Length: 123
Image (cartoon, rainbow, N blue to C red):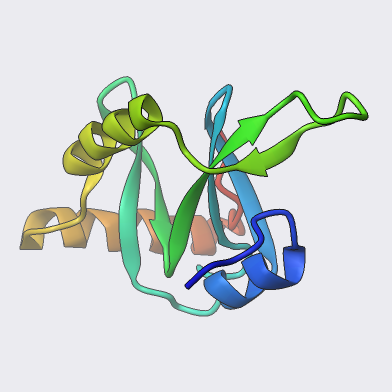
């Protein structure tokens, strides 16, 4: 499917709710459902900082690049470059949620965040 990545209605449709943008790198964002944890969405990908899991992305997510050269000097989302895709392949391979231990850890992180009232991914 083709989506206009600067149309928020399209992006909300993909993630199934209001969007939360999490900046992974200066020019790469992950887009997730802002209420995914409250909705009980399944863990999808660990948010890894310095090789340790610091949070969990849940539900449907996708990645977008950022372009800073539009005519108004503002940022727009754009397709990922080949080098960004290669980075994300390595990141996702390291941060994938598979195996019983990792799934248990991911669910424990989410449960603890909900217990404390922390539902927003922060870096």
